[in-house]
Structures are given as C-alpha cells and as structure tokens.
Image (cartoon, rainbow over all chains, first blue to last red; front, side, top):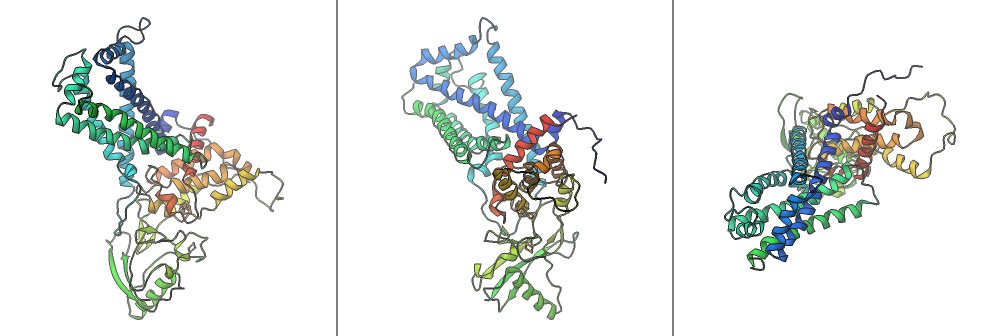
Length: 234
Length: 248
Ligand code: SF4
Ligand code: FES
C-alpha cells in the first residue's frame, strides 16, 4: 500500500499569505484592527476640544513632543503615520484584489433577486471607498491645512472650528463618520472571524462589541461638529 | 394546484440561456418539488418538447445532487434540500422562478444542471485520511472526546450540495471547505494531515476560482444541513495555525 508522500516544498509564509484568500483576509483583519485602535485614540483625543482651546492645542502639541527625549521632536508621530500608511495601503490593496476576485466568481446574477445580508455588510466596499476619499480630504483640511478656511498651523482648535463652520465641512464629515460606524460594525466582527476568534459561544459577545464600538466611535466623532454647529464649541 | 413556472433553459454550456415560462396543472400539495418537475417533464415529452434537465439522485436529502435556486433561494423557501421541499410550501396560482446554481466555478452544463466537480477537486486535495483501510476497526479502538465527536459529526453532515456557493454573493466555497476541514481536523484519525489538509484544501478552493469570504452569512442561512457560520472562523484558525506549524 502506497501512502502519498509530499516532496513539493511549501511556499514562503509571505507568499502563502498573499496568494490565499484566507491570508489576504488576515492582512485585512490585522490592518483593520490597527486602524481601529488608532480611531479609538483619535476619537478620545478629539473630545479634548470640550475643555477649551488651550487644552486642545496643547494636546496637539504634545502629539509632536510625545516620546521625547528618547525620540526626536515629532518622530513618534511620524512612526505612527508610517504604520498607519502601511495599514491603509495593505487594507486597500487586499480589499481591491479580493473584491475583483469576488465579482469574477459570480458573473451571472439571479433573475429572481432578493435582498441579501445586512446594510452594513452590503456597504463595505462603497463605505471603504468613501472612507479612503475622506482620509485625503481630512488630511488636506486639518493636517496640511491646504483647504482649511483658517489654516493657522499650531492652532488646531481654531482650524477645527473653521471646518465645521462651513456647510460642506459638516456634510463631508458627517457622511464619513456614518460610514465609519457601518464599516466598523461589520469589519470588527469579520476581523474576529478571520483571525479565528469566533465560535458559537463568543458570537453574541463579538456582535455586541462590534455594535458598541461602531456606536461609540460614530457618536464620539460626531459630537465635535454638532458642538460647533450648536455653538457649544466656538 | 396550477402553477406558472419560469425556468432557466440553456441547451449547452456555450449557448446562451433564458427564462422560459411553463404552466403545470394537477399538482398535489404532497408532491415534492422534483415530482412537480417530473410532472412538467412528462407533459413536455408528450408534447414532443425537450424535458427540463435537473440534477437529482437519492431524493431523500442525503446525496446533495439536487440543486435548484427557487425564487432566489438555494433549495427554495424551506431549509432543506430541493428533493425534500414539498409543494405545500407554495400556493395555487403562484409564479415560481427556477434557476441553476450561479458561480463561475460551477458552470452550467444544461438547463438547471451545473458542473460541481470543483468540489471533488477540493476533496481530493485533502479531504481524506492516509490510513490503511481494511476491516472496520473496533469502535472504541481510538478514543475521541465527546465534544470533539459532536463537532466532527456536525461538520460531517455536509452533503456537498453547493447551496452555500450558490447563495454567496461572492460565489465562495468557504462553508463547504470549512465543513470538510473541521470534520477531519478535530479527530485523531485526521491528525497526521492536520496542517497540510487545511493548506491544500484552501489552496485548491482558491485555484478553482471561488470567491473570498466576506462573512455575509448567506451560506449558513442556505445550508440544508445547518453547517454554522462559525465553522469558517474555525477553519481560519486551523489555517493560521498550519502556516506556523507546517514543516518546511
Ligand atoms: S456546507 Fe451546507 S450548503 Fe454547503 S455544500 Fe455542505 S451541505 Fe451544502
Ligand atoms: S436528491 Fe439527494 S439530496 Fe436531494
């Protein structure tokens, strides 16, 4: 009786990951979780705006001195930016490649259509595109200050107030933050499944955690434009 | 019962198909969906027309051959196989749409029949154990903890029908593959190939052109055997474990 013996060599781990749909999803899950962690910190930092211009601008300055004296001025911030860039690019490229594959795997639609899956699930692709465009706008608005009405560097508070004093600034931001909520709702739970953390008993906890994260993030981010619009922050 | 059927007719793999309307009369609510199609086909043969081709074999819900998308649902409105679906799920005068499984990896052969040999090739990649088979061993020769036995059995229930692929908006075979991987990977008999099995079967699945999993959950809703969605997470865990463990 002959047993099958494997003589072929396995590909390297990186190739194995990038070639497999499961591996690419793992890349998406990990990069997604990095960005999610950043979003939580970013949202909490934003809330400092409710303590006035001095505290908010001081916090913005601290982000640059963070890590000193071990690190040089703004190095920690730049390291973070590089990490985030890698996460965004990895997430986006994997999503693009997987989406193309998914669409090709189902060329013919059913004649009898019916509504499938939840809203958050169905809007992952469009939501992702909206968020990518928003990131570009957001950086031009509040990081490089290219499109900001106030555009005074070092005066983060005043720049934020200027953005949310325009109707388009508010509309773009609110749409993007609703997209964040929907994206996180399906994304967080999916990441847990992809990393193999889901099982029947943990299902409820993971779903609840995804909903809570999505809600808290959206509400926290939206509180800033709402406060500017209602005059609580000015 | 009298019914209006709109059925996908396609002469062969490379001719275009279309929905064609038929009327059937004299359908009893006790008939299965396939018996209803038999009635239609008898009519068609008597009229000198080509009968509708569809897959079926056991007609008792265990072989996985029957494969119809009925009103947009794989296997129709009940959570069972098409052969176990009865006409009492429909009402007199209903219009029913009948289509084949849709996925690039399941090309249409004729009418409602699709080629599901891609599943066979996934199985060939690792859905087996390398052990001498001879006379059946004693049932208690290899002890298996009860929870593992239950887990294995739950996944062994997969009949390879392909409803999961048909229901998935990405045409993904993750639920099927996870059922097969989990079934053998949890058992001591499957342990020698635990890593290569999951790596090879996932690779075979990708090579066949199935889509990736976006965790839509449509597969688990459509599965007539109730393979649960967390099975996919369990397979992902096995895959990630295997990438660390496999000997190079
Ligand atoms: S997982 Fe369910 S739907 Fe998919 S092939 Fe197996 S029995 Fe059919
Ligand atoms: S004909 Fe065998 S499962 Fe339906």
